[in-house]
Length: 290
Image (cartoon, rainbow, N blue to C red; front, side, top):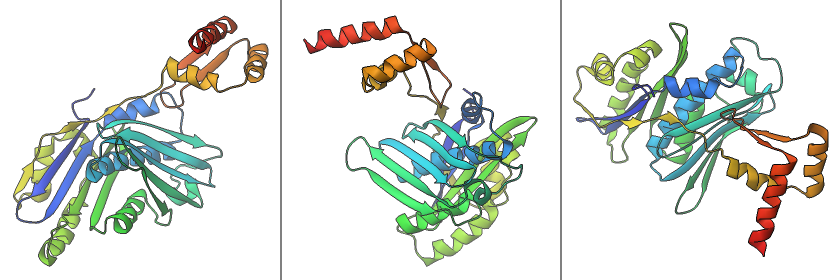
């Protein structure tokens, strides 16, 4: 895994403002490698990956997170699934032509973003935001405004550096105990952060980036957290899915195709079941029941 696939947290010592910076090129490449998406869809998937990773670090929970955008446009679903360990996977479903340079609204159409947090302990939480802004950044900012009421700004940079797709971003947020002075300073820090370029996030180390942006500020940088592509598919999960199908449905597929080939839409892995392997699974199940 690339050493750059890391999330960095930092704090402005003189102001009640915290930040995060992320560069996740390798994870982005792993998500794209088994798919042939239009360029605009690749960009949107990268943006959602960056946003989800930053969200996960900001919301502070122990469990799983799913951020999905769905609508009635040619791209009817884009989803990133992850957890508090920053293990990410994602996929997009494209059902129509997507022109290069398409905007979020042109790809998704009328739709919404759903953020679902499933902690290992405690209740599941779900937030829904309508796709009204022109960019994903605006949608995430709207989510924070309605859910946490804390001034928050997201900066996403997805592009191409030396022929390779890159994905990175930064997030600034006012701390809950901030006074009016910190909120005024926040606007100034937002203006500075908006100048960050994708190439800087991809190629410079975090200390260089922070110095370029905030050389007049006292910034404390904390230990980084690794981010990686991780798929949760397995043969056992496929077996569990097969067990939910009726014998008639299973036999119909076997007669038609000679096998059942289950492909993971996230990582492209194939799990193949023949008539004999399914019979073996049925025998094991019967033995467990008796």
